[in-house]
Image (cartoon, rainbow, N blue to C red):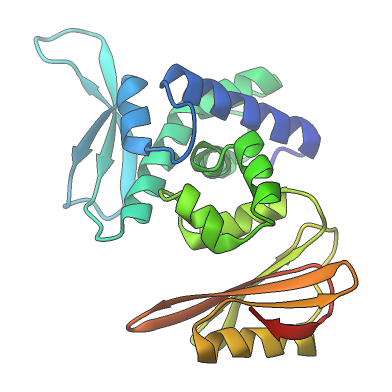
Length: 248
């Protein structure tokens, strides 16, 4: 994204900008309400169902012919609360992206074409799941997805799972939709290995039972969680090694 910036420096800067924004918005703990944060930061959220995108950041001239412009988030209605929260958090990220570039000493105009969008995505994840809070809670709840979801209600199950890749220890996160692997990534360099027999067994047990399943081998674990709806079956796995499957 920004080849001249070390990943650690980028991550630290993103964390700092996101936390500063939360402090400025008066947010002191989870769950983060992106709508309230936007309002506290002086951003207007307005609805526009005619737009093709879920949300967009614009500057609208204030009434009375004033030259000053107010930052506004134009939002399309969506039945899922987590999608609405993500859309607003992303546009807050768009608003804050320039601050990230400035702190890194990078000219936004000279950055790659998709850099601003990627920065907005990374900031949105850190706004809904701030790194220090999430890291502490992850350890406290042994990275149990369902417990973390109860605490971070404005973030989707998938976003919570993906954020686990930003935290130690080395893990693999996998997502299955209707028996099909749709996402698999590790926070270690290189490509994640193929699904192991133990992972497949745990995933299958979670799929068929609708209950959380875990497997262990020494200190290594597999955690499999069903995220099932009437017309959609998804399972999310967090893996640290091959293991034999044990239901709980």
